[in-house]
Length: 228
Image (cartoon, rainbow, N blue to C red; front, side, top):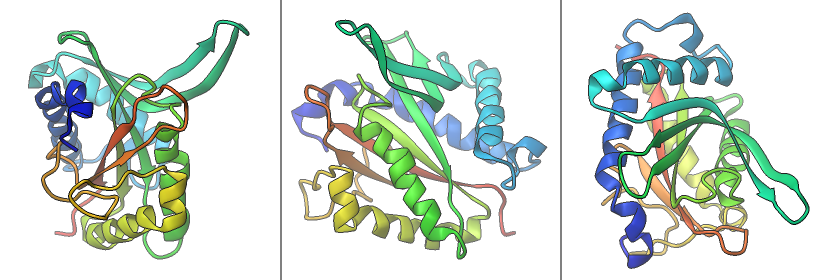
């Protein structure tokens, strides 16, 4: 993932990494005394809205000077037909104008269930999450985006992480997601030598819209409670 094609995104690598580290550490801090709206039993919108607003409120105190925007409205305008297309709402968008070019990236959250419901949650992660980056509904003008998997307990992390990796690399899913093979191997997934160290693994994908940049997706797993 280090060829010249990604130079523009990687030129902002340190800034993105700092923001991601803040996202992860702030989540862990909140889970020491979880707010009711962030319990795993809550819906994704409840969880992400509270978390996004908490990030926004705490950002400057932690040296993060951009803005976190929950439920950010996105879309594109066809100026010839004068209609909106590719409309949607991101779970959370980070915006910063302190670097050139301005930085914007999307974090899309999906709950991951263990045992009963595991297959359905993996399918939703791919088709209702990752695919929105592939079809350029999310991050239309950006080369990076992030998927965040929420799990009930950190004891579930290893099994859910392995299951998700397998699901993403299934041949049919890899074709749907227009996955690009890792230049250093045959796999479509990178779990070492990561571009963004806060991630558990990364994937990269061709866009299914002509003229759109390909996209690197970082994948992060966050637990709602510890097993200790």
